[in-house]
Image (cartoon, one colour):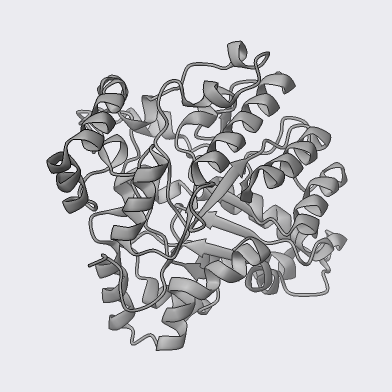
Length: 394
């Protein structure tokens, strides 16, 4: 019996759990020596590095010991990250999907972008060959992981520093099999993502019917380091490290994406590219309720002084036409749907990351039941919004 039964479930957030050599396998020879080692700081540090070193042994044991595989299958929702069934082995991921019961699943990387881009949106590397060679390797790898199973939909990653190179890698990612592109919410050093120089990027995504995505890590977490210096004991997180996502990070993790999407709407990019679609993944959705109202207030308050704000539609209308969001399981998805409509939220499990919890469906269902959300709106949340978001790549 699968975990999710009784309807179609399309999962808008899952991950692979990269090992130390994963990205290097897919990099061009001239790029390979320029890639940084994978940075496990944000997911457990030394404790995680020790675990990752043991991954080949864990996989081999599950392949050769039926009892070990049975334990992994029985604990499909309990074992997280590198311990999880299907975290890095494609065949295991197919088995994991059988047990989970999801019809489709978007698949993101976890840590590999730190080898050529940065950590939590802080850009560390500025060599175009490293930035775009690393992105090409990541996109090849994630597409390869998903290529054997039609239920899996690969999400590529493309920096926006050089619009011409970004266009090249978006096209290559689509040819390799990516169904969506993760873009940084952090602006490039020399221009806004809404600058006319960026139009070819958004035009290419629209032409290829590829949605863009902002994910946790798209932008820096607001003043994280300074607020962490609070004089309190630093305790280990769920992965065993001290420098992991914590309560205060959850409160502000959407700030970078909120600024990015506000600019995309208020500067007229979504008006210029009406078939361009965007999504916000693993950054919660509670903030979306006041943000939609604030967009319209900003237009009303400033359009006399900023003429470009006189858009053909209200800013909130572009949100409803072109954007989707995922909520964290503890958030009140029923109430959010009541406030902003059924067409904006997608179900997401975050498998196999700890943030998804051990029973995300129970939490979502409890909230939907508490608000008496009708069946047609539930079907949108669990399945149809995902299909609309991916379009021809669903």
